[in-house]
Length: 511
Ligand code: C2O
Ligand code: CU
Ligand code: CU
Image (cartoon, rainbow, N blue to C red; front, side, top):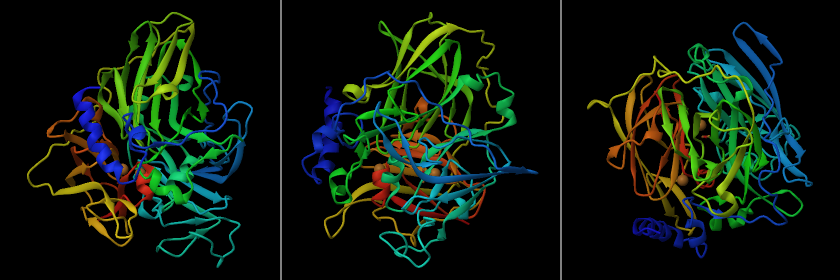
């Protein structure tokens, strides 16, 4: 290990020591967090085909609006061969159904909660009115829970707009084509509820993207990356609530899933594919590399970021992707003869977790797709000016008076009544994120562009419109945030879901 790497580790370990013994193992990789070990045999890698979640169908469509109904319920699925896992899924599946929406066309989703716990649904990356944004205390109580009935965490502590049985989320989608996702956002419980399966893709298309000769149909594949741990009976393992402090850095699984399957394989033609990479892990960070065997690496060509198409494509040999982020990439398999196996690796991990999935080139295929040199003529690059308001958000661990670990922003744990910023609708602001640790910072509603990282220019992989950005230990990331869409209360938070549940969230009011 280089001296620099060791220094980074020591700094991280200083913060970790406060929570006890687990420091070294969790800091060994580039991931912040602690591994929760599975019981029972783990599947061999590359033994199951990659599933692709079904596309949701509207129950009806009217001029300009598509109406959907989806039910949150338990489902029994086979994730580990021969064993059953109960998931909490949208429509009982994990990942949930993929929504295929259009820019500027309203999508209305009625969510029914048939689980035994309250939920909140957030459309991550959506330009959504505040009532439908999935604010963490806007609970949807289970249908089975009679009005007036209270159990642990069901009501009470926080003011919010509570619904019982079902809630209708209204998504006008005044935004560009992009890869979004939806997931649970319940106050204090997002991490365990997403872990159990409450997440899915939400894709927005538009005319600008339609005109491009990019791979489509079967060759446009969403890939949801997340790690999980399992008990011997196949059920998901997650730390018990009283173990919170031991796992306060974050929970890492020891089984890598892609679209809900462990280390899967996708059979591909020797042609271009579009992969919409999403890191839906609670804590795990990935450094992705495409290993083509015999020391060769295949390249990714990035065409889009969280907020849609880049102005122009850029080749990347590796992709660092943190929880909440998306990378839209093209991989060209045409140079590989049939029967080549390429392995998507996570070089930030150890052991079996270095494998993510495999691509098996099985046939030749005619391919008339290509990657145009200009992807988005309408892309506007923001530039900082002296008159833009500057705000700082510092993401840091704090110990509360009762010795509990808390993750805070500007020294404060989340409270529904505290507002850290009041940007004006239509304005652009300079926001500076700093941190003591690895914190993937996510802003609701507003998209941003990264202009500086650690006092230098942004790195290549920071390109494009984003809603989530990797903020590394003792690094300042400066972004220009554009507030469009709606006025009202929104939030920014760390997308390490354990940090988020331990209060690393803050409000801002768009005025
Ligand atoms: Cu993907 Cu506020 O979260
Ligand atoms: Cu979000
Ligand atoms: Cu964090």
